[in-house]
Image (cartoon, rainbow over all chains, first blue to last red):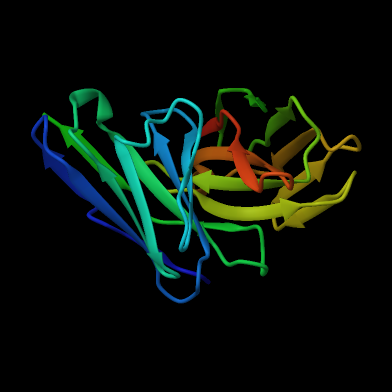
Length: 116
Length: 111
């Protein structure tokens, strides 16, 4: 099946610094990737939809200047958490869809961000 | 906005017992997907239902999509320890092609 990777799997950073998370589709082209955030024992909350070659679409309440998304190629999307604060600590998961093949989303393994 | 609720939130069952989780959407869905997330893991796609009233089976798992396409259920027969995890339904709206995840049901198995 389709594989999505995320890097890094875990990151600890100091408050005020920026962190970049990469999401790659390894064996298929993903024109659309999605970024989710998950707090402990809670559901996945969609943050933004990342479209290759165009600006990301952010969900209501998600600060686009804080969570910068770039989808530079058909296999790579990045999420940069800028000026991170402890409240940004969370599990960030990306997913990718193989366009016009299926609406099934393939999820990456997630990145656990801890801001100290 | 669209809301997708699941009940129960938690379910503890003895190994070998059956388990059911119910999913209800505030709006009519284009399709419904089910995912399983093991503790510490990421969501893994299980199945997609598209047609009104559709029923699909995967070994001990039975998935149903309601006639009105606003609710769905997942039933597991004779649970095993490998069934442990959180089961999420996710509703797709063709209008915006976004998945809205349900609140999830966490299943634990008592050996």
